[in-house]
Length: 333
Ligand code: FAQ
Image 1 (spheres, helix red, strand yellow):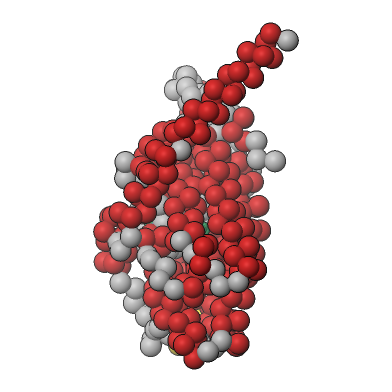
Image 2: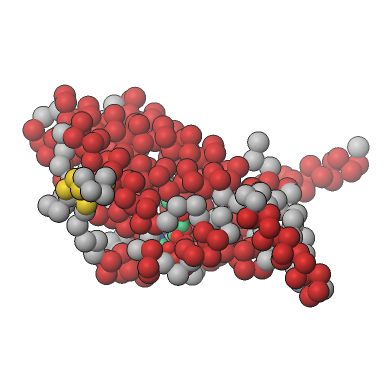
C-alpha cells in the first residue's frame, strides 16, 4: 500500500527549471495550493516547500522510531499476557509509522541514510516527549492515553496536508494511533477501577509527570513558532499549535473525570465565555531545554538508536547480499 518511495521526484527537478518558467510554475503551484489540491512527488514544487516537508516528515519519522523506546522498555515487564500482546503490537505499529514516514520523505529526493545520519549525529530533532522516562507500568497506559491522544489531535489534520504522500501515510497512522489511545485509556481505567490504592496512586503520579510535557508536544506558542505562518500558507499545517493544544485540553478534561484522576494544574477552569478550558502557564524553558538535548533521557535515547544502527549493520549487509544474488540469478535465468 505504501509504495510512495518508488515514486520519487528527480533530484534536480527544481534547479533545472529556467527562471521565467519558474515564475509561472510558482504561480500555478500557489493556485493549486489555494484551490486545496494535493501535490504529488513528481509535481513541481518550490525548493522551500520541499525542504520544509523533508524537515517535518523526517522529524516525525524519527519521533516514531525513538518513540518505540520508552514503552519498549516495558514489554518484558507487562503485567499480563494480554497487556504484553497489546504493547508488542503498539510498539511494532510505531516502527511501521516510522517506515511509512521515511518512505514519504524519500519521495522528496532525500535518502533514508541521509535522514538517519542526521538523527544519529544529533542534528535532527524528534519529539520532546520521548525524552522523559517510563518509571512504572502506569506510564505505559499514560503514554497511550495522553501522548497518543495528543499525537492524534496533531496528526488528524495532517491527513489533509497538501503533500499527498504525507497525507496518505497519515491516514493509516491515525487509525492505528486511535487504537493506541484506547488501549492506554483501558489500561488506566482497569487500574483505577479494579486496582489497589497503590495502583491508583501510581496512575495519578504518572499523569502528574506526563501532563505538562504532553502540552509541550504541540510546539511553541503561535507567536513564537517560526514555521507556522508558511506551513499554514502551504497547507502543510491546517490548525495552529495553540489551537490544537486547546482542543487537546478540552477533550482530555472529561476523559480524566471518567478515569477518576486529577490533572496537575490548579488554573484549569471552564471558561464559559470562551467555551474552552483555561489552563495554566507552560514552562517553555523546560521545553527548549529538552529540545536542545538536555532532557532527562536525551542521551540515553540517542545512544540506544545509534547502538541499534551499528548492531544491525550485519542485517543490512546480508539483505544487500541477498538482493544482489537474487538479481544475478534473475539475469541469468
Ligand atoms: N519536540 O515553528 P514550530 C507520536 C521544534 S509522533 C521537538 O512550531 P513546526 C506518535 C520545531 O521542529 C510525535 N521539537 O515548528 C507516538 C521547530 O524546530 P526546527 C511527533 C519541536 O514544524 C506516540 C521549532 O521547534 N509528531 O507522538 C517540538 O511548524 C506514542 C519551532 O516550532 C510530529 O512530528 C516538539 N514537541 O511545528 C509514537 C507531527 N515542537 O525544525 C510513540 C508532525 C516544535 O525549525 C509513542 N509535526 N519543535 O529546527 C508537526 O506537526 C510540527 O512539526 C510540530 C511543530 C507541530 C511538531
